[in-house]
Image (cartoon, rainbow, N blue to C red; front, side):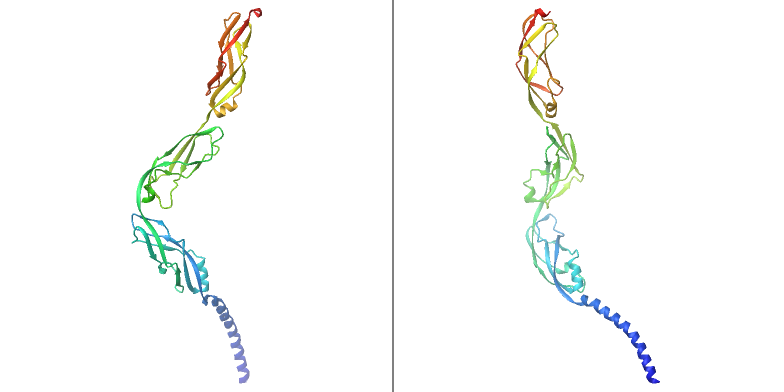
Length: 312
């Protein structure tokens, strides 16, 4: 009897212990990678923190510091993909080149992760004295207006700005430029907000409002020669002849207008013969041009007109 009871008790314990053993095994398998220790290099970017008033960093340190970290493998892998940053505070730095020792404790790490070493262990940072200076603004443009048009003038509001930056840089500047405005294909007034083209170490102190630029585009004034335009007589019933019968004109005006100008549709050249009896006369021609155009030259200026009395 005792033997049967012992067997029954053994079976019950067996079936209870097997699941517990499986669970423990799975926990061990799951924790094994985490418990394994690993060393790895993690590149941590450097951010410039506080600096003494009146100084600015002009020669920044390396973009990153290589930290040799030691800790559980799973955590090290996560740290390599995280956004670790090393903030370089320099409250006691002076103008010139400063050598600053890396402090590993300045990066936030899990308790079970340690820093084995850093590369480099020292950083060289150059700081310069800053000044403020008022400079005129120069608007830069890019591209070309529509064919036949050109830039008349450029205006910007405000015309001056107050900047702060390294003394060595600012003291020699005569003006500050904006980032380019694209005027490609423009044939009218272009108004646009502009941004100053500041170097990394410069700061805009005032104005706080955005800068507004206005680029005034106008048609180019050009000259064009029109040859062999017929000269006509007006105001007579007599037969007449004009010698020479044609005229050459040089006209100036906006390029788009002159490109479309057509003679004799748009240009009339006539001689007034009103009240003239039969005979031979020397007369200038009257030239009618479209609005916004100017007569520059005419050849010939005088014409010989013959009125035939037989046709009266």
